[in-house]
Image (tube, rainbow, N blue to C red; front, side, top):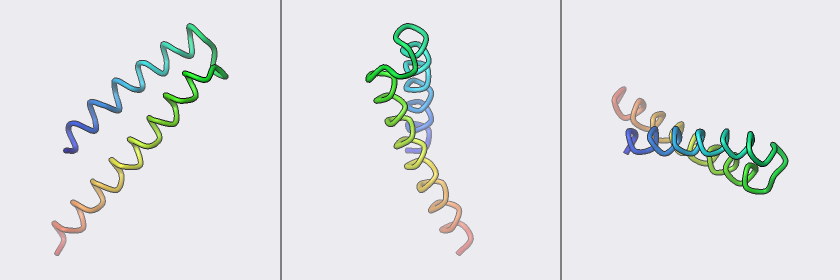
Amino acid sequence: MVNLLLKQMEQTREMMIRSGVENGLQNAKTIQLSRRLDQLMNTYYRQTTLEEESQED
């Protein structure tokens, strides 16, 4: 799960950067990709935090 999230985060980051360069930072597609990256990062953080907590128990 974590490896998949990392791959999705990297792909989304690359698409966001490309969109920002091609369309501008205020473009709707760029903003959408930025929000998607935020969601993926939050999910990754929650997932890794849960795994660390379960390993401590």
